[in-house]
Length: 217
View 1 (cartoon, rainbow, N blue to C red):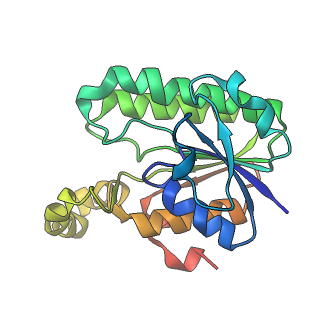
View 2 (cartoon, rainbow, N blue to C red; view 1 turned 30 degrees about the vertical axis):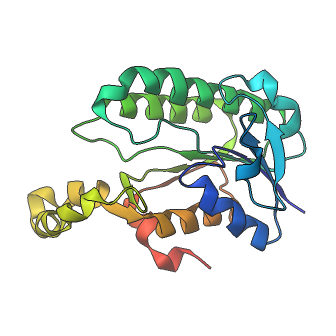
């Protein structure tokens, strides 16, 4: 049985991903803060620790083939630059080090579409995470959504007509595709695919790939 270690398992995407993996017969270990154990679904192995301190959970990564890192500041905005560096970046460093130490075969990293005209610090932090993974020598998949539509994350629906217009104009088509919107369902299925079909080397999945149902079995 393949064992998957997940950070951010009680978050926006983790809550959707874990049941999907359990249904497919994967063993799942999920990192949670003390007091949040009950937020994980039955069948998931609970790992209590601190996502910012790899020493609190590194031993439990041993024996895992895949590491999925979903920790990040909720509802990112340009005003949260300090938090991106203190949470997103620090947690990524801890996760990559723990996975490397445990000889994890495949690391799945939630990144962001790039380049982009806003969210400079967020982009820098996620790009630094990608760089650390490239330097680690591990096989890795970088998922690069821009905005994931779902419960509590619906305001960009009002922008869909603009995206349609920009996608028809040659000068703006590439940017509209790269910075397009994806749904939580699409993102969940792409995370599942990343686990079930591990990368050899580095695989980068941009917005069009996340939307492409033909990529999935």
